[in-house]
Length: 139
Length: 139
Length: 77
Length: 77
Image (cartoon, rainbow over all chains, first blue to last red; front, side):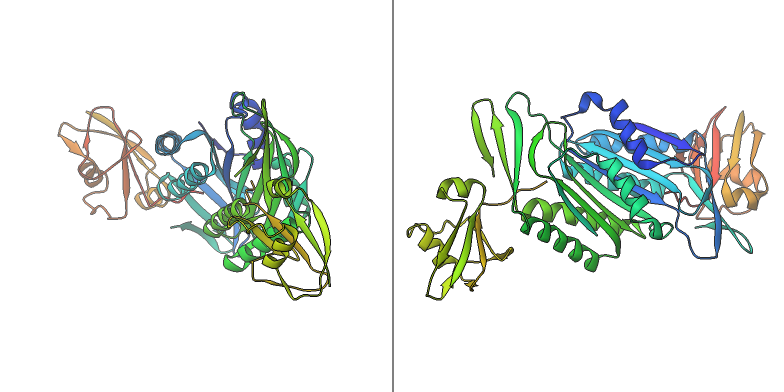
């Protein structure tokens, strides 16, 4: 069960691969299903130049970790991985990666969906868009 | 919209990464969400040595392609990728990869789930397990 | 007319045939082809069938040059 | 008692403060801390709050050494 916040560009597929190689080696042959979600900053035409992702250091990580524990208790999950960008982000860059490993596909899908939905609605992140004509908080 | 059957080991995360680089370059900044599912052959203890995945050459590809078209019509999907192993498979190897790219997360999740569920229940694949004491078709 | 009939997986083993060509002057359906190839053995209810690589049912009509397939329940992924 | 109060995002800009320490001899709740720091401005109903990095509500009691945070609605991912 891993939670990571990073202020640097990250490559989601490379990170999932590395997580399986490094952390899930002992589970190889045990998990039959992994569901992942990757969220990317879209290019909204000319309007948004950059996005700044503010968080609450300490609380954000704890919150994401508690979602992971809830998922592990609610479904039959073998492991989860959450990586989330903070700080300044450009269009086309990955914002978030969520992955859930399980023996079977239903718990993998449901845990992954639960994690991204709770992350979106309950984790302490705030988005500030820098536009051509100023700065705006996203609500 | 890509469908591939392969009789060789494939690495799902490498393949998704390559697909994004090769096929989705023009969509960069357009998709904000990708949902993926990877199914792996589990190690069922001592009982199953290898799995043989039979398919119906021609019909299997057409069926998977038609599921992809249905998903694209039903949800707001930008692209999909399905890769499925055929032939002999060992425990720990990837059997199937499904991925759906969309602007937003709900269609990405729903299309990905639809593709794996229809693939499991309606695509012409058959599994034959080689056990220590013989061969058995999975039903 | 001339048609191709295929069997897959456990059904291929049960029938003992992988693929065969049959000739007929009658109007045919999937069910009639099964009966002809399988010597009047009743078509098991779990058997699936396809005509020209699309799912069909026992009453689906078959035409010259068609490819008919019979197979057991499918399970991918 | 001594407590830390933090503000995040648009609320930090609205309040004009990022972090401050307050001292008090009264029994405190989140709502009372808000009133003290924001000069009796009513606590907006959309404002969220946390005590020691766990979600709390206006009536949550605050103790010596606690870290209290106020912030606008969250949106991750």
